[in-house]
Image (tube, rainbow, N blue to C red; front, top):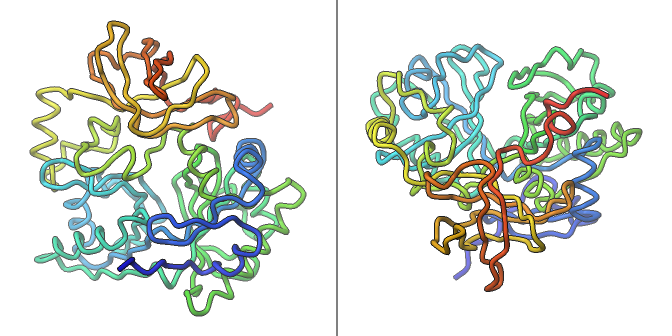
Length: 380
């Protein structure tokens, strides 16, 4: 018997204009006008995504900081209220249970955002490991809608809906706010590589989504002068791949460690203890055997998940985890795991595409010119 397909708050609204698909058990917009239009809108101006399929978990209490520091690899003690950090949560073997952004709302109040496919798994893992800690854990995903407004004109779009100076919210900072007379929580984060905000719409449940519907439509109106586009999962995937951001289940999972995934910057081994620390310390001491890298296809072809990668001697040295055609760069790009000894930027490799070896090059992330695109872009 198939599992029931879940819906998000704006399901009925999206069905009017979007091509829908099922992702991680949720019926979601795949695209509206098309991946190229939506992708380029975000890179060049602004786009809006409904990401309400992601999880929202509140953790609060006297032991909340100590508990979260035990659960994650990053150091939450460094977070001030109204700040965020990217982190991973590992099992005892150092494998990645999930990667997510963690928010510190108050001194003893946190919110973490599990990937859609991991909502129940993460919640159960957190609850299981909370024994002995004075914490309260609450799953609020179905009570709160979540949007992402991304692109170089994201701030200008939302500023038209706000009486506050949104420029004061710096990257990976967050704050309670109001947009179009609606209570929200704003964070300057996202999954595209671009500047932008993720918006948590309070009091927008699956049964009473009125606040979410109103805010979505107001965002579209505010973004009209900038050519805003509604964006689906297809553009979200091509954008995150250009930016070098992992998709859980494709590029990372419980058989891959954050050190192998080039996420060592969120592993704070100097912390007293966290789940997976011993395994990660051992791996760091011994050295990783394979590493996540970017791939640029330099001949005609598009690499896809599971495509094998060979060196110029014909030896298999890795495999592709994500691949697509870049709407911005106009060539095939990918993410892959390569034997550490061969994972050097600039190395030429051969990717097996439809039983033909196609030349590619190992490149660093992001795959675009960060002086021209992304949140680090230099103003013209």
